Length: 269
Image 1 (spheres, rainbow, N blue to C red):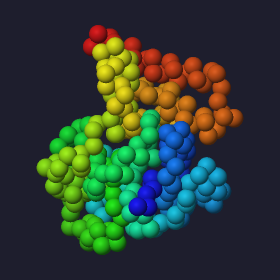
Image 2: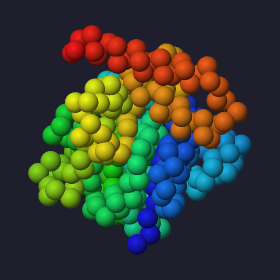
Image 3: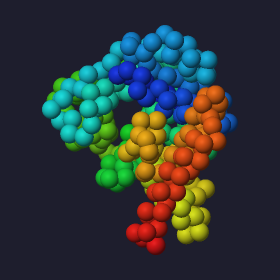
Image 4: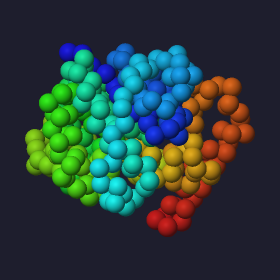
């Protein structure tokens, strides 16, 4: 079986630091599976060369515009969110683990390739729907064609790819267990930080955390980051860019996480 991890970089290079940190975390996990980065035409050649040097296989793809822009109720970035559907066109692979660029791999997750399509973890806000930030898919041109056809008449409850995909794979919630990933494969960064700061109470679950998903603040976009898991993200990023690592910055990111911990202890004890 040919397998790969896949990520999308589109609508500019705003998520480039996320891709670099994610690639670093995958390398640290010990995986030997290829990493495919799908990029849209505006991603510069110098950026592509830099990422290729970091181990990414670069594939240029055409963007897929949001078919229902009026439903973009949450964030403007949803204008390009549907482009990730191009992962179903990676038909030179039998199985793909599709990751969002704002995720970070904490432990080896090659076992995900043993899962069938569509495998995903529950969404933090709507647990009877899956979160599309981590998905196991089986590329297929026929499935992709069906998706493109469905885009014209299916409404997305959140204005982005997640709402659409939950409609397309509507049977996920009632499907067999192999389609349902444990929460540790896609845990919100603020939940990770909460568990970390209350380690004595949550220590039995710490080993289950495998992928952290930065759903709210993105560490490279928000200064300061006050929703947790800042230090682990920057540690992964500095492995790619050691020239940017400074002890003062490390202490700053630790302080950001400490601020989150202090607030949670204040409110929940």
